[in-house]
Length: 383
Image (cartoon, rainbow, N blue to C red; front, side, top):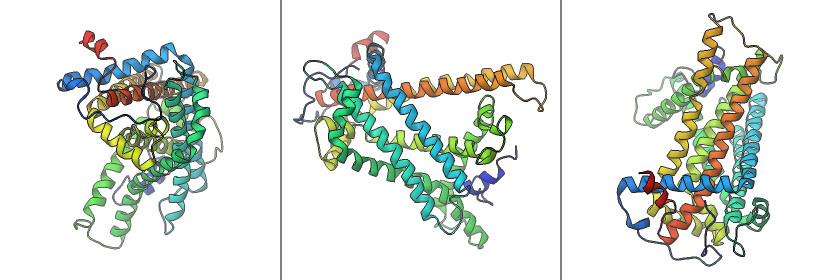
């Protein structure tokens, strides 16, 4: 399809044109000594995977028995929806943000949107951690945890600035690499020189990511929703606006997830032990060193569930192939409504998985400090 040629031109898609359980005792304000060994004394890769999956299962069980934590899912969904709208507005105001002499303005605007999103997510994670932390013999409500998180606004804001700045630089580096290669090519520079090789690699990876997402979102049922010209006339941003915003939101969300996973225990250390930001970051890396296998297994397990569920979009293609035998077919209201519901359901599953991951983080945090893995007995019986 050629409807996205303008967007791909500046995105660099073409080389020649820019295109749980509640934690028990010991999670108070007094820091505990960090456990130096592997949880449960090691036990090999298979046990590490089972312990990671066990943390995810424990988080799922906690969510089932404590359904008020679904408020966390709802609020995360609203934050991401706000991020999507902000990305859409950025595209409407400047359809070619990373092409031209002034690259500082789009960098600042991207950081502003990213910081707002990251701060909200960090604050929600702090509220979740505090609601799962025991108080007078039991956990508290999620909103009570959010109220307690207000006490830590300063360190949470500082950490949000760090994460948002890192995410913005990673995102814009991919965008600017394609633009830089285009400008160099126009000025007859040799792109085979060693100086340009890192930018060539970044641009190649970045282009592959955007191309993959564009190809997926061009499929039924996503194109029902992302091509508003099918049912809404004169929408701001045109036919590329929503799709660009959706892809940008997905990429930035993936970057944020990676950054949060790499620094998984910073927020718990900030709010549960009242560490300074520098101490929380170093302490998180120390804890992660002891439990990185379990964290990877937990994250990959949740990711596989969401990915497997997303493959159900193939059922829409199968059904559409039965009723439409030519490219002139356009979906009716029922098809559009079903597409909306499908995307909402898939997005809901993703934020619920994020909630389970947040709860599992508390299990993993407690286990890394205490030296044992919850859920081990459950996963041993599964194995």
